[in-house]
Amino acid sequence: MVYTFHFSSLGEFGDVCKGKLRLNGKAELSVAIKTLKAGASDKNRLDFLTEASIMGQFDDPNVIYLEGVVTKSNPIMIVTEFMENGSLDAFLRVCKFNAYLGLEVVLK
Image (cartoon, rainbow, N blue to C red; front, side, top):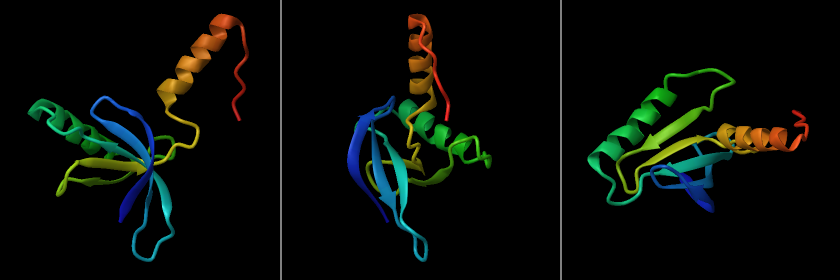
């Protein structure tokens, strides 16, 4: 069972939310839920599902983990592990801006 509880942002294809995933016999897990907006074109739908397919090919601790894809109900959803510190592209934008200002970025 997947349920959302926090709207995070608007992504390329639709909303991105933080939620919880509960699978039988496993602990509840924080997840990111990417949705395909209603009325998306066939091309956007194909691109969205292709993204999920590519993500599903990786099994590496340095790559976000695909928990699952929901296609039998609307909206279509991609469910991934939740990145507590945000997305890599947002982090890199902050680093670039801080470097521009002469600020040091410290990685934990």
